[in-house]
Amino acid sequence: MLEELKERASAVTERAEEQLPSDPEDTNAGISQVENLVALATAMAAAVAARHTLHATWRAAFDRDPPRNPSSRQVAWKEALLWGAVSGALVGVARIAARRGSTSLYRQVRR
Image (cartoon, rainbow, N blue to C red):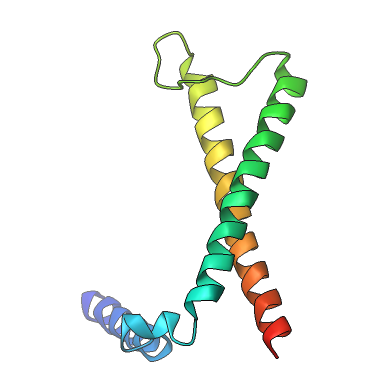
């Protein structure tokens, strides 16, 4: 049984290595500095917009401002964890979507 697990793990590792670039630097190959700056600016703007949206949504849902310092002792664990999870996820998704969207649009315009 242990040998079978080792074989399966080896097969999964081999498949992953085939799909990943051999050089990690290849993942950014072909991205110009201008394209990267546009993507960065768009991601930053999306993160700010997501945080403003999240603050407004929190106020509407709970009739109070979100915690300014979730690590403070005055903030309940439940509220601190909820704020951290929701804000981190929303801002992260907004940044990734903005970077990918701006890169796609930039490449369409460049053609």
